[in-house]
Length: 133
Image 1 (cartoon, rainbow, N blue to C red):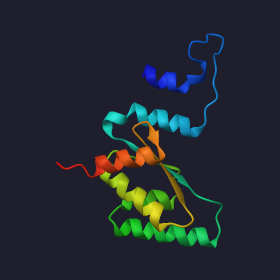
Image 2: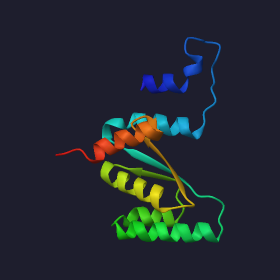
Image 3: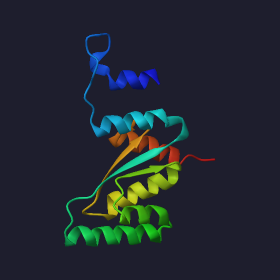
Image 4: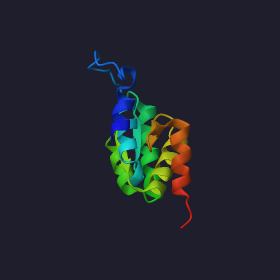
């Protein structure tokens, strides 16, 4: 836990005059994913742009594709435009992440896993999702 606090207050380590730091949502989610790294918890941050007809068509198509892959709960949460999806199963997180990223033109997604984001998180999740036995 102290390593996470040190990461959150990295600019102020060894400076007792600094008692506060500014954080953005990415830093908070990275810290959360680091806290639960041993449980292989993946967090998907969904990005829904301002709604227009193209966004609704893309959202509907994505929801349909997720249902088609058996990810019914994920599909329902995305239909409700949930902003954070938290998975305890690396394989289901990987499937949902790939489906969202590749099959939706109007909806974006950021992956956070084991205290990492972006390519590093993707590599770690891919490894855990496809681990044999």
